[in-house]
Amino acid sequence: MDDPSDFRESVLRQIEQLQARQTALDGLVTQVLALLCVKMGPHLSAELIDKIRSEMHVQGAQPNDRFVLLVEEYVAKLADRIERAHSRMTDEDR
Image 1 (cartoon, rainbow, N blue to C red):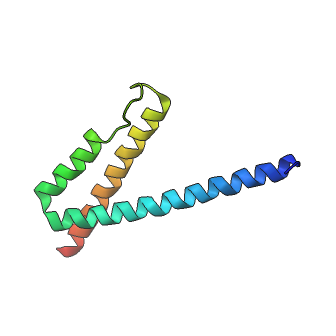
Image 2 (image 1 turned 180 degrees about the vertical axis):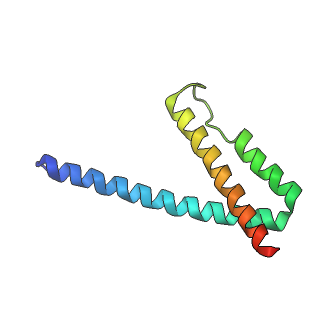
Image 3 (image 1 turned 45 degrees about the vertical axis):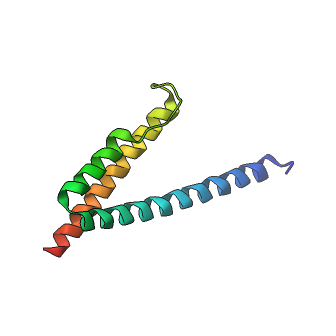
């Protein structure tokens, strides 16, 4: 891989593979947890989503570390997606 364009293409492929895996995992986690929330009922589902928002964070890092902030932002968005999917599922059941 002496050619810089070959290296660039290799890195881009790896990034695309990571994005694809993350997107698939996000969808799976969102749907599974939303379905679990439907089965648990409104009180426990609200508690689970609140726990995701308030207690999932990076251990052992500095509070204002860029990585910590990115993880916290991602977790908050994931909790929002779970909550929306849960709402859609419960609205469909009515």
